[in-house]
Image: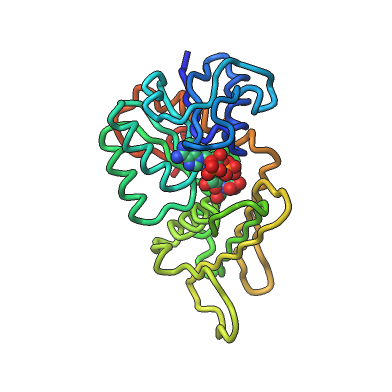
Length: 266
Ligand SMILES: NC(=O)C1=CN([C@@H]2O[C@H](COP(=O)(O)OP(=O)(O)OC[C@H]3O[C@@H](n4cnc5c(N)ncnc54)[C@H](OP(=O)(O)O)[C@@H]3O)[C@@H](O)[C@H]2O)C=CC1
Ligand SMILES: O=C(O)C1=N[C@H](C(=O)O)C[C@H](O)C1
C-alpha cells in the first residue's frame, strides 16, 4: 500500500489528487499540507475534496512527510524546490507537477535528485506525453515546416507559457536537433519583421475555466499539420501523478520524466 503525501492539498490539483488517491486501491492518503497560515489548516482534506471526511487533517509541517513513501506536489516553484531539499533529507520520493521553474530552480531540483528519486513533468497525462513523442517525429519528418505552439488555460494560471507548451517546444526542437532556448520566440508585438526560419513560436491564451488545451502547428506552403491535446478534467493529471508515485518508489536517486514512467519513447 503506497502511503501518499499531498502538498498544496487545498489547491485545484491538490483536491483532484486527494480524490484520485481515494479511487486507487493500492494507495492511501497519509499526510496533507498547506502553507503556514493558510485558511484551510486543520480542515479535513476529504471534506475539502468533496468526498466527505477521511480523517486526514491539513497540516503545515513538511517533516510530517517522513510518514509517506512519496509526496505528490502541484504547488509553486519555490515550494517545490524547498520541498525537494527537505524530502532528500527524509529519503522520501517526490513527484513534481509544478510548472514555471527558473533555470536556477531546475538546477536545485537536480541537486536533490542526487539523493532521492524525483519524477518531474510539466504534464502528467498519458495523452499529452504521447503527443510530445508524435511532435518530435513530425518536426523531424517536416524539416521545412514553421513550428508554432499554442496553449490556452483558465484565468487563474500564473505562469506562461505553460509547462506543457515548453515540453512540446522541447520535443519540437529535439526533432530538429536544435536547442529550444536559442530558437524560441515567446512574444511578438509591433513591427516584428517576417518570421525567422527555424524559430519555434509560442502563443498564450488565458480565460475562463479551461483545464488545458495545447496545439502544435507545423505550417508549410499551402498546408498545415495540427497536433493537439485537450484535457477535459484535472483527473488525468492526478491519475498520472499517482502512476508516477507507484513507479518511483524504490527507484535509485535520479531525475525522471513521465516518459520514463509511461515507457514512451523520449
Ligand atoms: N504537471 C501537470 O500535469 C500539471 C501541473 N499543474 C501545475 O501545478 C501547479 C499548481 O496548480 P493549481 O493546483 O492549479 O494551483 P493552486 O494555486 O490551485 O494550488 C496550489 C496550492 O499549493 C499551495 N501551496 C503553495 N505553497 C505551499 C507550501 N509551501 N506548502 C503547502 N502548500 C503550498 C497553494 O497555497 P496558496 O494559495 O496559499 O499559495 C495552493 O493551495 C501549477 O504550477 C500548475 O501549472 C497543474 C495541473 C497539471
Ligand atoms: O496550471 C494548470 O492548470 C496547468 N498547468 C500545467 C502546465 O503549465 O502545462 C499542465 C496543465 O496544462 C494544467
